[in-house]
Image (cartoon, rainbow, N blue to C red; front, top):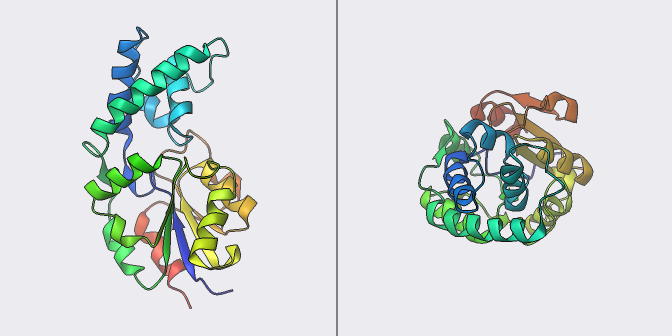
Length: 221
Protein backbone atom coordinates (compact mmCIF):
# COMPACT_ATOMS: atom_id res chain seq x y z
CA UNK A 1 0.00 0.00 0.00
CA UNK A 2 1.37 3.42 -0.93
CA UNK A 3 2.44 5.92 1.72
CA UNK A 4 -0.08 8.74 1.99
CA UNK A 5 0.90 10.44 5.28
CA UNK A 6 3.52 10.57 8.02
CA UNK A 7 2.99 10.91 11.77
CA UNK A 8 5.83 12.26 13.89
CA UNK A 9 6.52 12.20 17.58
CA UNK A 10 7.92 15.47 18.99
CA UNK A 11 10.26 15.16 21.99
CA UNK A 12 13.26 12.96 21.23
CA UNK A 13 12.32 12.60 17.57
CA UNK A 14 12.28 16.14 16.21
CA UNK A 15 13.38 18.14 19.24
CA UNK A 16 16.01 17.68 21.90
CA UNK A 17 13.90 19.18 24.68
CA UNK A 18 15.01 17.54 27.91
CA UNK A 19 16.93 20.58 29.16
CA UNK A 20 13.74 22.64 29.47
CA UNK A 21 12.12 19.84 31.46
CA UNK A 22 15.24 19.28 33.56
CA UNK A 23 15.30 22.93 34.60
CA UNK A 24 11.56 23.03 35.36
CA UNK A 25 11.65 19.76 37.29
CA UNK A 26 14.56 20.76 39.52
CA UNK A 27 12.96 24.12 40.30
CA UNK A 28 9.86 22.16 41.31
CA UNK A 29 11.74 19.62 43.41
CA UNK A 30 13.60 22.40 45.22
CA UNK A 31 10.33 24.15 46.07
CA UNK A 32 8.81 20.99 47.57
CA UNK A 33 12.05 20.16 49.42
CA UNK A 34 12.94 17.03 47.43
CA UNK A 35 16.42 16.16 46.11
CA UNK A 36 17.25 17.50 42.66
CA UNK A 37 17.90 15.06 39.82
CA UNK A 38 20.40 14.86 36.97
CA UNK A 39 19.92 15.76 33.33
CA UNK A 40 20.64 12.13 32.40
CA UNK A 41 17.84 10.96 34.70
CA UNK A 42 15.37 13.38 33.12
CA UNK A 43 16.39 12.22 29.64
CA UNK A 44 15.60 8.65 30.68
CA UNK A 45 12.21 9.62 32.17
CA UNK A 46 10.56 11.80 29.50
CA UNK A 47 8.02 10.51 27.01
CA UNK A 48 5.02 9.57 29.15
CA UNK A 49 3.58 12.98 29.92
CA UNK A 50 4.11 15.62 32.60
CA UNK A 51 2.37 13.79 35.44
CA UNK A 52 4.60 10.75 35.05
CA UNK A 53 7.73 12.89 34.75
CA UNK A 54 6.86 14.70 37.99
CA UNK A 55 6.15 11.41 39.77
CA UNK A 56 9.49 10.02 38.64
CA UNK A 57 11.21 13.20 39.78
CA UNK A 58 9.61 12.94 43.22
CA UNK A 59 10.59 9.26 43.35
CA UNK A 60 14.12 9.87 42.09
CA UNK A 61 13.64 6.84 39.88
CA UNK A 62 11.85 5.61 36.76
CA UNK A 63 9.73 3.43 39.05
CA UNK A 64 7.22 5.61 40.88
CA UNK A 65 7.18 5.46 44.67
CA UNK A 66 3.67 4.20 45.59
CA UNK A 67 3.81 6.10 48.88
CA UNK A 68 3.75 9.53 47.22
CA UNK A 69 0.62 11.36 48.32
CA UNK A 70 -1.88 12.64 45.78
CA UNK A 71 -1.70 16.12 47.31
CA UNK A 72 2.08 16.20 46.87
CA UNK A 73 1.84 15.00 43.27
CA UNK A 74 -0.86 17.55 42.48
CA UNK A 75 1.11 20.40 44.05
CA UNK A 76 4.33 19.41 42.32
CA UNK A 77 2.61 18.99 38.95
CA UNK A 78 1.09 22.47 39.19
CA UNK A 79 4.46 23.96 40.08
CA UNK A 80 6.14 22.11 37.23
CA UNK A 81 3.59 23.37 34.70
CA UNK A 82 4.14 26.94 35.85
CA UNK A 83 7.91 26.66 35.50
CA UNK A 84 7.71 24.74 32.24
CA UNK A 85 5.38 27.32 30.70
CA UNK A 86 8.11 29.90 31.28
CA UNK A 87 10.96 27.68 30.10
CA UNK A 88 9.52 25.67 27.19
CA UNK A 89 11.61 26.21 24.09
CA UNK A 90 14.31 28.21 25.86
CA UNK A 91 16.93 25.46 25.66
CA UNK A 92 15.31 23.11 23.15
CA UNK A 93 16.99 22.52 19.79
CA UNK A 94 16.14 20.55 16.68
CA UNK A 95 17.99 17.32 16.09
CA UNK A 96 20.36 17.39 13.10
CA UNK A 97 18.73 17.64 9.66
CA UNK A 98 15.13 17.77 10.95
CA UNK A 99 14.16 20.83 8.92
CA UNK A 100 15.85 19.46 5.80
CA UNK A 101 14.03 16.17 6.25
CA UNK A 102 10.63 17.74 6.84
CA UNK A 103 11.09 19.95 3.79
CA UNK A 104 11.95 16.88 1.71
CA UNK A 105 8.60 15.40 2.74
CA UNK A 106 6.60 18.46 1.66
CA UNK A 107 4.58 16.30 -0.74
CA UNK A 108 3.15 14.19 2.12
CA UNK A 109 0.51 15.28 4.64
CA UNK A 110 2.05 15.24 8.10
CA UNK A 111 0.76 14.97 11.65
CA UNK A 112 2.47 15.58 14.95
CA UNK A 113 1.36 13.31 17.80
CA UNK A 114 2.76 14.11 21.23
CA UNK A 115 2.02 13.31 24.86
CA UNK A 116 2.83 16.94 25.67
CA UNK A 117 -0.11 19.23 26.46
CA UNK A 118 -1.45 21.66 23.85
CA UNK A 119 -0.26 24.88 25.46
CA UNK A 120 3.33 23.63 25.74
CA UNK A 121 3.30 22.02 22.29
CA UNK A 122 2.10 25.18 20.56
CA UNK A 123 4.71 27.30 22.32
CA UNK A 124 7.53 24.89 21.47
CA UNK A 125 6.49 24.61 17.83
CA UNK A 126 6.29 28.39 17.55
CA UNK A 127 9.72 28.96 19.10
CA UNK A 128 11.35 26.39 16.82
CA UNK A 129 9.37 27.47 13.72
CA UNK A 130 7.97 23.98 13.15
CA UNK A 131 4.20 24.50 13.07
CA UNK A 132 3.97 25.16 9.34
CA UNK A 133 5.29 21.68 8.53
CA UNK A 134 2.27 19.92 10.04
CA UNK A 135 -1.30 19.66 8.81
CA UNK A 136 -2.49 18.15 12.10
CA UNK A 137 -1.27 18.33 15.71
CA UNK A 138 -2.69 15.90 18.30
CA UNK A 139 -1.70 16.56 21.93
CA UNK A 140 -1.67 14.45 25.07
CA UNK A 141 -4.35 16.45 26.89
CA UNK A 142 -6.86 15.99 24.05
CA UNK A 143 -6.96 12.20 23.70
CA UNK A 144 -5.40 9.25 25.51
CA UNK A 145 -1.63 9.39 25.60
CA UNK A 146 0.64 7.02 23.75
CA UNK A 147 1.09 4.02 24.05
CA UNK A 148 -2.66 4.14 23.47
CA UNK A 149 -3.40 3.93 19.74
CA UNK A 150 -6.04 6.66 20.11
CA UNK A 151 -3.89 9.68 19.16
CA UNK A 152 -2.50 7.95 16.07
CA UNK A 153 -5.97 6.88 14.97
CA UNK A 154 -7.18 10.44 15.54
CA UNK A 155 -4.33 11.77 13.40
CA UNK A 156 -5.19 9.35 10.61
CA UNK A 157 -8.83 10.39 10.81
CA UNK A 158 -7.93 14.07 10.54
CA UNK A 159 -5.53 13.37 7.67
CA UNK A 160 -8.21 11.24 5.99
CA UNK A 161 -5.97 8.20 5.53
CA UNK A 162 -6.17 4.61 6.66
CA UNK A 163 -3.68 3.61 9.39
CA UNK A 164 -1.88 1.25 7.01
CA UNK A 165 -1.35 4.15 4.59
CA UNK A 166 0.64 6.18 7.14
CA UNK A 167 3.99 5.79 8.86
CA UNK A 168 4.77 6.63 12.48
CA UNK A 169 8.25 8.05 13.16
CA UNK A 170 9.28 7.94 16.81
CA UNK A 171 12.05 7.32 19.30
CA UNK A 172 10.36 5.47 22.16
CA UNK A 173 8.65 2.32 23.29
CA UNK A 174 5.40 4.29 23.64
CA UNK A 175 5.56 5.43 20.01
CA UNK A 176 6.14 1.91 18.72
CA UNK A 177 3.50 0.23 20.88
CA UNK A 178 0.95 2.89 19.90
CA UNK A 179 1.79 2.38 16.23
CA UNK A 180 1.47 -1.40 16.44
CA UNK A 181 -1.87 -1.15 18.25
CA UNK A 182 -3.15 1.34 15.68
CA UNK A 183 -2.00 -0.71 12.70
CA UNK A 184 0.41 2.01 11.58
CA UNK A 185 3.83 0.81 10.33
CA UNK A 186 6.62 2.42 12.35
CA UNK A 187 10.09 3.82 11.84
CA UNK A 188 12.16 3.91 15.03
CA UNK A 189 15.01 6.36 15.55
CA UNK A 190 17.74 5.16 17.86
CA UNK A 191 18.65 8.58 19.24
CA UNK A 192 16.30 10.49 21.53
CA UNK A 193 14.51 9.37 24.68
CA UNK A 194 14.11 5.60 24.51
CA UNK A 195 14.33 5.03 28.31
CA UNK A 196 17.00 2.39 27.84
CA UNK A 197 14.84 0.04 25.78
CA UNK A 198 16.09 -1.79 22.71
CA UNK A 199 13.63 -0.41 20.17
CA UNK A 200 14.17 -3.38 17.85
CA UNK A 201 12.12 -5.43 20.32
CA UNK A 202 8.97 -3.42 19.56
CA UNK A 203 8.58 -4.42 15.93
CA UNK A 204 9.42 -1.28 13.97
CA UNK A 205 9.46 -1.81 10.24
CA UNK A 206 12.72 0.16 10.13
CA UNK A 207 15.28 1.23 12.75
CA UNK A 208 17.54 4.15 11.80
CA UNK A 209 20.28 6.15 13.49
CA UNK A 210 19.68 9.51 11.77
CA UNK A 211 16.69 11.59 10.75
CA UNK A 212 17.59 11.77 7.07
CA UNK A 213 17.61 7.97 6.91
CA UNK A 214 13.80 8.07 6.86
CA UNK A 215 13.60 10.00 3.58
CA UNK A 216 14.25 7.15 1.09
CA UNK A 217 11.60 5.00 2.81
CA UNK A 218 8.97 7.74 2.86
CA UNK A 219 9.58 8.93 -0.69
CA UNK A 220 9.43 5.52 -2.32
CA UNK A 221 6.66 5.04 -4.85
